[in-house]
Amino acid sequence: MSDFWNNISRYPRFFISSLAGLILVIVAPFKNLFKIKKLRIFVVIGVIVFIGVLYTVLTSMVGL
Image (cartoon, rainbow, N blue to C red; front, side, top):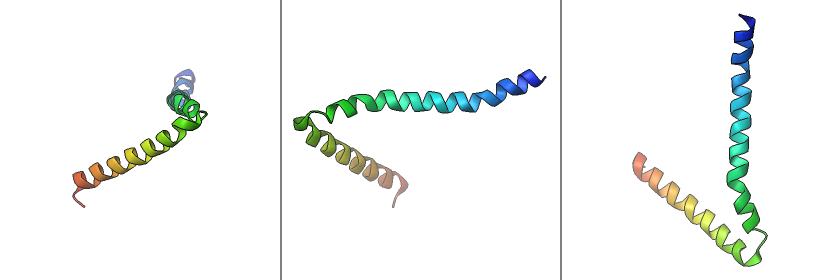
């Protein structure tokens, strides 16, 4: 029975490490775009526009 609880206690650690790996894989291409000076401004503008659109959509959905 202790093996069962030992395995259950490992799942949160596995979840956190899997999530961290997923975030690193998703962010890596954007990190490479920052190395190119011409694309750096487009990435920054794109992130700002994305956050602005996301904010607008969420506030419209909530009704604020």
